[in-house]
Length: 97
Image (cartoon, rainbow, N blue to C red; front, side, top):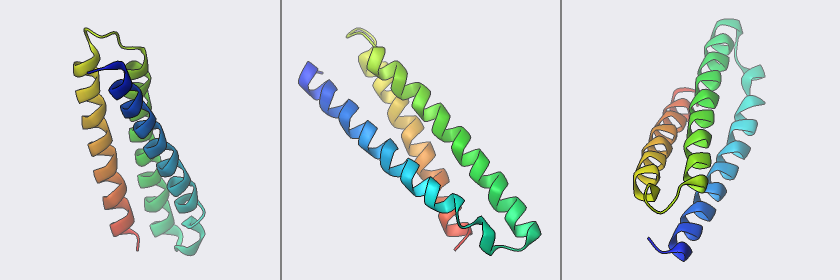
């Protein structure tokens, strides 16, 4: 992958992570609308979502530091982590409508 494509991919991933952070903050504020037991589950799942977010950030940081020889491998791992995070986020949103 050329340096320009690498920079574009990194920029796109950063934008995605920033948007997701904003959405997670919005979700955080909605915990008050649930009763005690549902709120606890909501907060636990939100905690799990944040853990996946941190894992994706770790992959993203590795991606930004990767040399040309490891770029594709780290890129694939980052994409996989992003998909897992996206699936978790979508499940979270659908579960707590």
